[in-house]
Length: 277
Image (tube, rainbow, N blue to C red):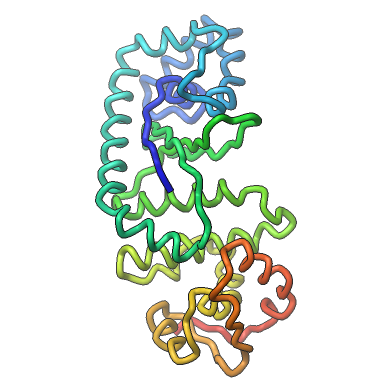
């Protein structure tokens, strides 16, 4: 996975205009723009997908709104805050990618295409995984920050994988989402932080993830003898005697594992002996 972190002025302006206001000054500015340039403001809304299609070469049909916004003193302050956030993420990624990338490949067993990470002010609290038609590059808009820089990086990788699998097995999106969480928010985060994060994620997926967990350990290559140490690590218990050890899972990729869960979901989900230690 090759990530390029970029501050794109057009996508930054677009998000300032169409996401929730991050300050009173931004809110006042947006109101004035709406009153004075209502038609141009409305027309600008469609630009989001166009920017994401080819952010480096995007040229607006009408740059009135963009020019006014970029000349505003408040935008300069937001731009500085965004650039600071970009450097923080870049530093964390550069410091950890030598360790993180092999772990990610070991967990997913697939190659993820290069991505442009279009960084916006983290006060926007926004992540945009829009997949534009005819996109020339893979893009994700990221403006979400945690007090833990490593957690911010994990969140970014998680959202990229969600984008990669966005249209995969759409009929079974809960299973897909549960496996993505197990892969990134749980196992990947656990490996790079050396602390278990298996009790984190979407609460609505907690039960499903616990049902999949024994097979997930088989996918990771844990032998029956290893299972107890994993259970102790992650504070999730199950009776191994109730499961057929699926040795072949350790040799498949994340897509095939999802397919396995879907194919065997009636058997997997009906098991209810799992409990938190």
